[in-house]
Length: 223
Image 1 (cartoon, rainbow, N blue to C red):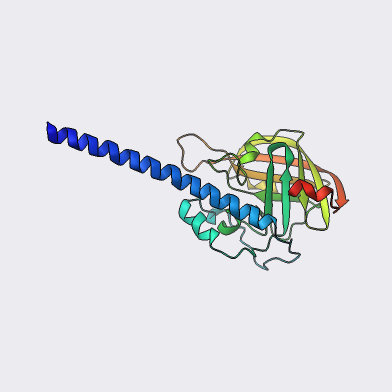
Image 2 (cartoon, rainbow, N blue to C red; image 1 turned 30 degrees about the vertical axis):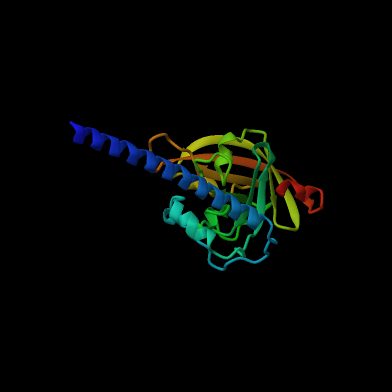
């Protein structure tokens, strides 16, 4: 009987230790992601990008603690090609060319090769995290009518969200250009409680409202 109590006590202590470790592991991961994002946002926007970016959705991996730690050790000169801000949900992120795992652990990634802000359907993807305030997690709170700001370092592009819905991961046609429309598409996972790899995605789409030259005033939205 005493041995049984000792085993139960040992298991309870072990579970507590594991629980604490997981909590701190998550906090450290969130801290690293936040630091990478903030560091990259302070860099200058590059007018050049990799000639060959990654646009294979099937190669995108989950934002595990080990992958986040590895990404945090890479150079801070990551080739940011733009910035995105959604003031209504306090989202501010760097934009990178392609959806490589390293890009998506630091900010948003372009979903098509050679797409340009202010033309066609500018499509971006990002990770949805347990922390509702980092990477593309704030998209869960975006509403129709909210404004989205993009900049390529020369101009600021202002869009207004007019579509919000849930789609499945196979509806890849939503990133295609639409004749006669200048729009933005934002996509992130739509988490399902208890499901590790959700097949659902949050889809936000908006139309271009205005294009402005960069000024000291209008770039503050990205700071």
